Amino acid sequence: MFGGEPLSADRARRMRWTATGLLLAMAVLFFSTHALAVTGHPAWGYVNAFAEAAMVGGLADWFAVTALFRHPLGLPIAHTAIIPSNKDRIADTMAQFLQENFLTPAVVARRMAGMNVAKAVGDFLVESPDRNGEDTRSRITGGAAELLAEVLESLDPDRLGNQVRSGLGAQLAKLEVSPLAGRMLENAMTDNRHLPLINGLIRWAGLTLEDNEDTVREIIHNRVAGVLRWAGLDKTISGNVLDGLYKLLAEVLVDPDHPLRGKMEEGLEKLAQDLQHDLETRARVEDMKRDLLENPAVAEWWLGVWERIRQSLIRRARDPDSELGAEMRNGLADLGAALKQDHRLQVQINRFARRTLVGIATRYGGEIVTLVSETVKRWDATTITGRIESAVGRDLQFIRINGTLVGGLVGMTLHFIVGFL
Image 1 (tube, rainbow, N blue to C red):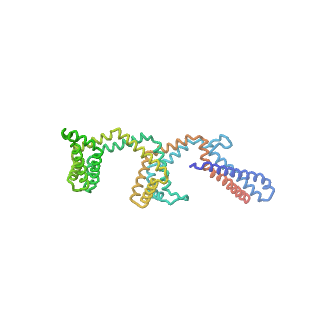
Image 2: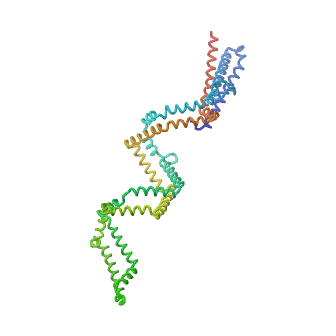
């Protein structure tokens, strides 16, 4: 209402000087033509009558306009300085007007019924680039990305990480992992997606055996009889054992029909069934999950992971060339197109917006108008007078100008009528 107040005040001040100057001009004209109206040409009578009535009309309107905001000439005349003297009543009246005409549920619902909010948002999201070549989506995503970065920087990373971990932990605690893992393993075996797992286990077994050859040789050395050790046959036996194991693992790895591979698959099938249907297995898996979630090492690991994620999000949000901005712009473009074209989506969103605003008006309408009323009441008389005068003062000065001119025309008309009679 009072936006651009300095510019409005300047305009009002210029118009006030204009109206005052016109009033003074009429006074000068009246006194300078008074004698001529008596002794001179009859036309001077009309000029003098015009100036006299214009001066009276201008003075009357000056008094009326001035009385709205202050006491004319500083005199405490009754029923003047109307606005500063009644600012509290004005505040209550404004609040009541706002509530009765804008913030009642019925009014909000009626006004929202004719508005297609969803389509308007869709048009806004897909509008063409502005003069600087920047479209709406870029402005929104730029602001949203910077806001995201500032929020992530302002929050305590440890506290936020613990909150996220607690939230994930609570959701995982509700989730029974065992049946899910069993179905995943079963589906993987159906599509032969478990074969890389078996091959990986075989290779892992071979590498583990290679890293622990000395340990295997020592075990065989300690287990064989003393005569064999004395004869040095324990080294031969351990070598043969290791060679046999390597050969077995190689055969299992290259032969898809090897019996040992079949045994492994049978074991995986049984594990998949037990994970889904065996109560004891499911209980053990749940205990393992619970122990894992409560392990302090896991909590420390998660905090490290979260901090890396947080820093990565901040960098991506601040980088104008990152994929984050492009993904957000594409998402907004898709959303805008859907809001423009999908009538069912428009109906749903418009209904939601209408219900939301009606709910806000119902729940908070009284608080909003109270805020307006109390804000205006807290203004001092000078402030409210200056703001209202800045907003409407220019139009009020036009009233003074019009009153001066209309008064002059009325005076000239009356002079003509009196002379005619």
